Image 1 (cartoon, helix red, strand yellow):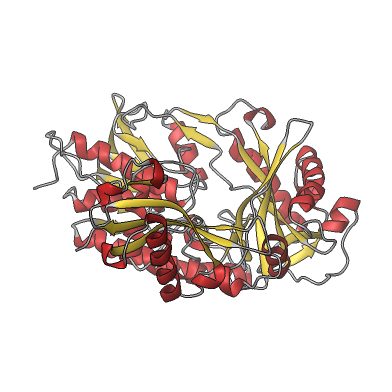
Image 2 (cartoon, helix red, strand yellow):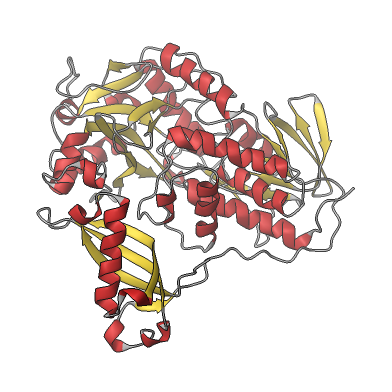
Length: 541
């Protein structure tokens, strides 16, 4: 196998030169030959490491690449002023850690099968630790049917829904893999996704995504790998209690009637496991409230976003356009867009009876008529009305309940046109854009189900965002409320070994307050798995 030996950055290729893989490869090879001033016989291979779009000049849009290349006698180009931006290709491979020597009395247990639990389970199973994964929800196929029942008929299963079940909340999203963390494990996560059937492009895209349609099959394949390595995956297995003695974990209660001896558990419960949060607090697990954000979903025609971001260029060449916006109010509040879903849908994401939650979702092709994004305002524990560590949960519930009531029940959501929201008027008819939210929307005033300071900050932000994305404040853009699950409302405290104040409990991922999104959650799960690997020897009976 030919391995690349140099990395070359800032190669620009016009979008017309990269409309398919063959043209793109030819253009990249030509660019490398030109930049290094070498013959074609000196270039053995070129592969893309990173790819992004430069659309600052809409009349001339470029793809910008960092590539890895195998070059004959590469030392000619390394550390030479004439070849700026040329470095040795870093070794990105994942390095296995040495196993510890302490014997485990029981198999390690992972609670939750979102990204952190899934990847912790995969890395532990591959190293011979035979983890047991307990997921309160169902496998992804059964879960999809339950989600469809909510979207089509307003019937919610509180244990198997958009928040709970195989793959976690990210399974019913855009499948975004962007992250702000800079961790070598990210490459390993992306490779695992590709090996499980995700598009190869996620390895190099500046804004990688899988799409909910592909992600559903990817998580199943990863589950099958875990089982093949000796792991045990149990669905419909909700942890209902923790047995603790002398500051140590002793056992878990499952579904109120089964006990599993356990001294090591990775808590990957997700940001919506509210009943588990309360149980953990009851058991003396130290946690604290943390900031998060609440707001609405905003929908525009995807064509409008494409035109605003890319001019007259067609999405066939560069894909559906997105945006990421932020606004800082004189009041001290900040508003921003989050989890933007090009060509996507607004979806019902409730997990408790009588509480309404929205989220966004896109399939891989992102070919829906509408674009949607969360439009959120930050809130802090000072807003929650209590110093209790779980006051953020009750704060979320307050607005979710009001949204449910404003929608008239059946998980229909309150909606308002942007122009009417800004003018404080009740909307009466749709304009050029139709809502995508299922099981349906009801005209209502968004201000009736969000705090005043959130509403006022959104009213300031929308006109400002219009100066950044032309048409953002269009009269008939749609606001659908409410979005409250941007991140966990709590943080479960842990030490440098990832252990809580109760020995043997490892809080991980987004639910524990240490991640935000698929990638960072997966990486946090791997880190926790590494702590187990370094401490204990592989499982054996």
